[in-house]
Length: 180
Image 1 (tube, helix red, strand yellow):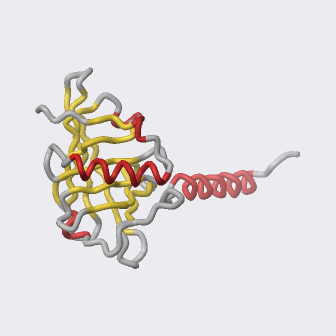
Image 2 (cartoon, rainbow, N blue to C red):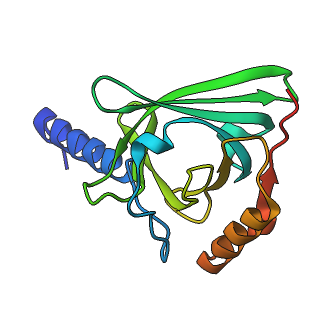
């Protein structure tokens, strides 16, 4: 069967729309609930990564921080930085985040690559916004964050228990060093 150029264009546009839709998935792991109410303004600022489920964009990084700053247009600038201890150089990724929905929950969508967004779900946070647990779209993404380079053992224990109950394999967590 021979296709004319308009059929090819329509098929290409349809495929591209489908891929963007699938690639821009901003879901939350089954059973997880985002913090509610969530105070975006209290969440802004600098966070230190305490541990993470490792993935290719953070491979071999220590001294990882994330800075969240509100932009004039209402989006949040995300500035992730870490030191690659093998290459002996700093890596930085700048992205943007937006709240998902308007129900006051700690659900955001984050993009570092144009129109492609991923889920960023604050699923645990203390009342002072000093310690947080963040889940991605699925059980392959999890971070424990702190306003300081350490986190109290009791908080770690509580967050890891919650993560295990959701199905995370917490033995796979990479513990981030902060020595620079």
